[in-house]
Length: 365
Image 1 (tube, rainbow, N blue to C red):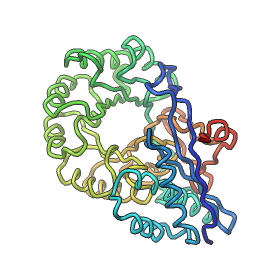
Image 2 (cartoon, rainbow, N blue to C red; image 1 turned 180 degrees about the horizontal axis):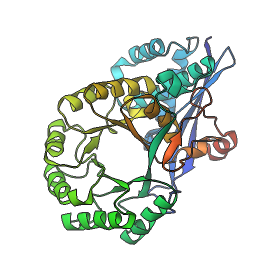
Image 3 (cartoon, one colour; image 1 turned 45 degrees about the vertical axis):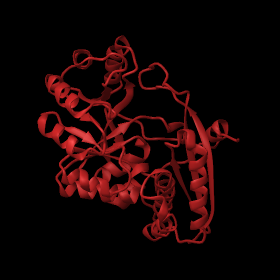
Image 4 (spheres, rainbow, N blue to C red; image 1 turned 60 degrees about the vertical axis):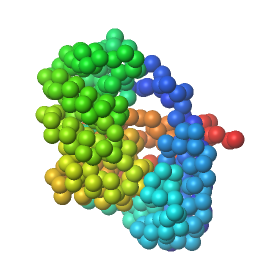
């Protein structure tokens, strides 16, 4: 089997909040680059990437350039193809546009491999579980009014979610007291039995994270996420050591090596891996194995329709972030039932692009 054709498309999906009917995001759409890799065996693999924002057209061009290099290659040799692409683009460094483009190709190769072998991706990678916990994300944003989030949080529990994530590091003239009060009111709204996470998105200093984190301990947060700059490993370690609340981080990290530094420094209690920034499925699994060696659990960032396979495959997989930004791209996606996602049983990713939706939202310029 050899690769015969690679085709990409920029797709602009509406940026709405479907979980609790919240206010719109600060941008009207999310732009994705979709990818199809065809083979002479009639098997097609699909991939997707984003984070390009103003550089989405550049990201698509990078996907196309890398795609041209895989023509004629054997798609089942995922690591061999990956080495060729990394060697060809070595001067671009281990992160940024190259890694985002590379991840889409890696994803499509694994999709082909699963289809060729008649196995779901989760089974290929280990097949530990058939169902995994998932948490609602994106419905309790820091930009949403307080009166909205205290009503939205119970709506999520009514939908069966037993885990959900809010945000702090509030906009405007925020104080520690205001931050803590918001968290306490959301906790009161959902009760003590819901796992409540909190994302800071790198907006606190180390001192703020320790100060506010200690004030939040009676809220019983499941984790505090990305409390300060993602590459301040020593600063993160100070926070993690100072707080009883677990500290999660890693979504902003590109490639494998920074995770080693993070784990060696004991910067986080929970490793969060982003499929695109880490460099695709193969790299995701390598980081998960590294975290297991340090006795650290792993969680995912975005793309629950794909991450369900990865978290289900590993012994230290904790939960899947359920933020359905990309769902319109596909005909069918895993849907939470009682706070869990079932692993798709179809071969490969178990996903099929919705051609009508992609055509409707395609960017032609």
